[in-house]
Amino acid sequence: MSLTNDQLQAVAHLARIAIEPDWTDALRSDLNAILEQADKLGDPRLNELEPMAHPLDQTQFLRADVVSEGDRRETLMAGAPAQENGLFLVPKVIE
Amino acid sequence: MSQYAIPSGWETVIGLEIHAQLATRSKIFSGASPAFGAEPNAQACAVDLGLPGVLPVLNEGAIRMAALFGLAIDAQVAPVSSFDRKNYFYPDLPKGYQTTQLARPIVIGGAVTITTGEGKQAQEHTVRVTRAHLEEDAGKSLHEDFHGMTGIDLNRAGTPLVEIVSEPDMRSPEQAVAYARKIHAIVQYLGICDGNMQEGSFRVDANVSVRPVGDEAFGTRTEVKNVNSFRFLQRAIEFEIERQVDLLESGGEVVQATRLYDPDRDETRLMRTKEEADDYRYFPDPDLLPVVLDQATIDIWRKELPELPDAKAERYQSSFGLSAYDAGVLTSSRATAEYFEAVIAHSGIDPKLAANWVMGEVAALLNRLELEIADCPVDPDKLAALLERVGDGTLSNKLGREVFEALAEEGGSVDAIIEARGLKQISDTGAIEAMVDEVIEANPGQVEAYRGGKDKLFGFFVGQVMKAAKGKANPKAVNDVLKRRLDGE
Image (cartoon, rainbow over all chains, first blue to last red):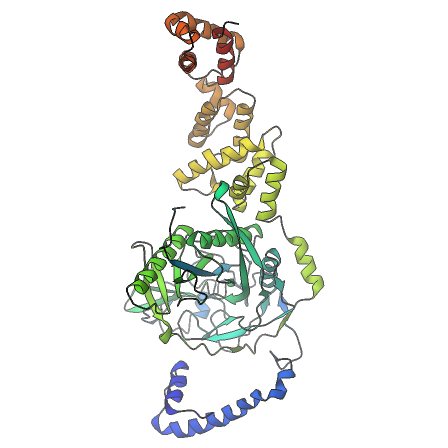
């Protein structure tokens, strides 16, 4: 498959990336190369293989259900650009 | 529950997505506490904030609780499940993605049985569960005025949720409510969710569509969100059915969309349409390995299962002789069943009498005071003490209700209230005979009419004796003595 300019813009919007007009051609060509590789997954011979959720041949370690983190709000919020009454402040979001 | 009739010629198809917040001590991927009501951001650790370089470590408690739910509904607990990233940008989700289970959920299949209607109208119905998967909750956005900005509290971020997805197996708002109540009861019996709908621990989204009766194909559906009580669930679905049928009957079309229920206006409002729906670009979370559960672990968890509502209701019928309806009401919530069982744990209490009181006086009192049964001002021990006095004839049912009211309002002990108010029922035959004789003597005309065949006058005599006894005579004894005296024995 080959990516159109509109599709490129849509993907960029979903990822919240602003694309400079003169990047468009280079990006399209890179992405098309990636998609070409991904297309190989459609090879019927792969149908017999078990899908792999993770490249490591290991399973998930489970943590005991205990509280280990206390209130470190002051430290953790120190880098916030804006805050008030213990809340992070962000540009207005309308639902 | 109000009787709602779907517009004639139409059928509705309903499926529910229920988010139950798991009652773990810590969050799903971090060691922070998910407890409700803390200072903003006091329970948001580096992992919850999505700071660079942090890694999630999965909570065994969340896995166990989700598995218990699967076992309770006879589902398959997946031997291998895994986590995916659902990508979207919103400030209450600082990582830029929600960690969830798309491809391989922990619970697959299962079903619950629901009952609608009562008595002869009672109908059983099976609702299949498609899947239940684990995911993390997002934080909270506060839109009050912060100088034109939005406040973000990430305490809730990372709270473990199990999302329970049903098949579109429900055909009426009543069935949808019965199913939601059944799931609500099961998660509380299991102790995996506190079920508090006001605090958002148990959230229900309804997928609703309509189609002409007889059609095989589903109509276009809408998803109704923001329903935080069972009553609102019923109302929101009713509204949505009416809205869709009106649209279709007037030649319009239903647009696939997410709608918000507004309880103040009792209507649903458009939130977003399918065309604007996000592309979430799911992919397997590289930070989390597949979760593997061996059969031995699942078997240990299976042994932890408590007696569940259906089994309990069955037992109430077979052991106590309760009706299916009564057994269903008493087991509909874990707290109600616990209250009932605490009452009948006292020796000599008739379970049927206890059932009537729990469903009658106790339920009415709680309704009036808007309290949950766990906070009932008359605790099970006091109700048992009261029922003991009703059972041994000290109190009539009517006087029992008076003592119950006094217990609710003033507290104190049953016997002290009976003593202080002189409520003791008169069961002494000699005293009752004396009152009966007086009544007969004072009403010779009625006695003659009664003996002449006016049977209905019997009630008059009972009333007169009760009046003389200030309502405290044992009604059965009064009847017996009157019969003996009037019928000339």
